Length: 239
Image (cartoon, rainbow, N blue to C red; front, side, top):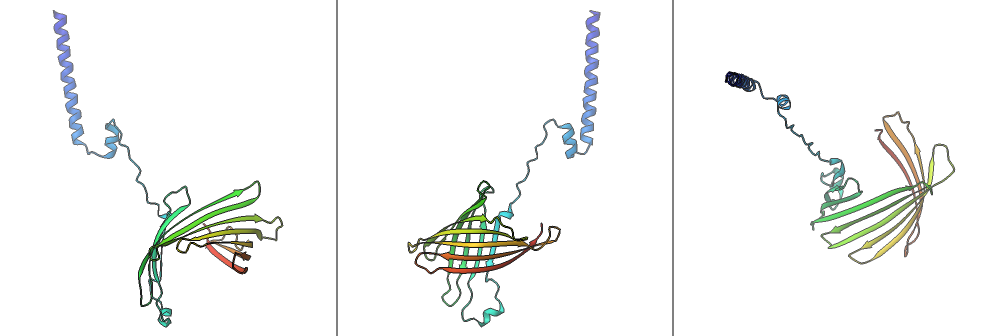
């Protein structure tokens, strides 16, 4: 009987001590400032911070043409067309772009028309054959003419083995085919070019300058052959 009373007294003392500790801890909790660090230390369930998706404006293009009037337009009998457009790449891993464009035609009979455009391109290097192959397609749908146009083109770059100092030269073959949905005509052509490139600056310079030279000869059914020559200088920041 004495042992039982002793155990009961010990249990009561232990309960009072635990209650006192709980009250003290509770007083400590309510007296402290609730911060994110305090929550991470006292709350068992950690809060998961989800990263916010950042907008990818690098895959979006916006342009305008003829919005601001220039001094040269005052000497022309008709006004320029005004256009505003945008284009975006919805999928990061695929080179597919869609866009739209609003056009206000100039002159007396001005009208507003819209175009929906799409394009896709693919480029691959065949190291075994030493050539580069590119395929591209583009099209647009015109609301004013209620017609559409689709173009399919390709490039085949064959580098030359000989080196001309710092120049890199290659032969480029560019076949193309165009479908006019309004008239139903299908046209095709082939352009062969000799392309030469040279880098005019060093890698340590702030800007990168490239000089491109093209000599081409194009043939197409029902048209005369066309010869072309292009000299191009490109300057861009050396990122």
